[in-house]
Amino acid sequence: MSGLAGEGAELARLRATVAGLATRLGMLEDQVAISQVIARYGPAVDSGSAAAAAALWADDGVFEVPPYAVWTGHAQIAGMVDGAGHQELIANGCGHVLTAPLVSVDGDEARAWNYAMNIRWDAGQDRFWVARVSANLWHLRRGPAGWQVTHRTNRSLDGTEEARALFRPSTDSGASARPREDR
Image 1: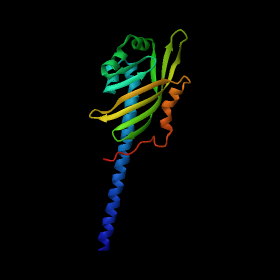
Image 2: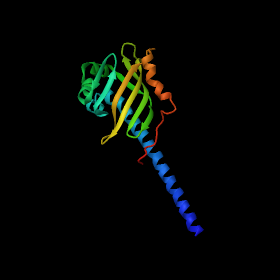
Image 3: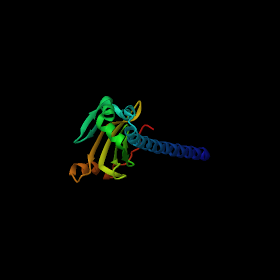
Image 4: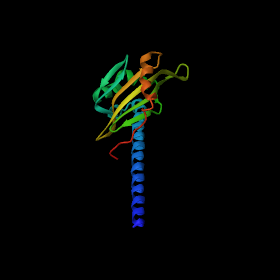
């Protein structure tokens, strides 16, 4: 009997190990998927792909970039990309360069923090220059279409408290990915 009991205990340990690995793998898959959503932003807006940029957001998603504007929903976000101001930026040479995000997942909701730089071409000086560096806080939700942005807050890192405050929650020890309970 002790042989069967030992095999049962070993099987239970093996099942627990597999369940733990599945949870950890799910957490990593979520982090990668969220990072990919954020990484697609720069190429979408710099290529003028309004539909691709808008698709990163949920239907009611918000993109807030004071003092410029707040855009809500796919039509407004696509309109920002198709707008004269943005089209002039990319026609003159512009790159939206985003750093790798710090991602915190809690079930089907997530937050991510990163830097964004708006780098522009100066043909007269034959050089690129950094026009803006900003702090970004992304709120994302998992839905039928996968992870999408529900709210992106972008603030210039111009010395103001508001911009620095966006990053503070990312410094908490709790701002790491948590495994989903249902995996």
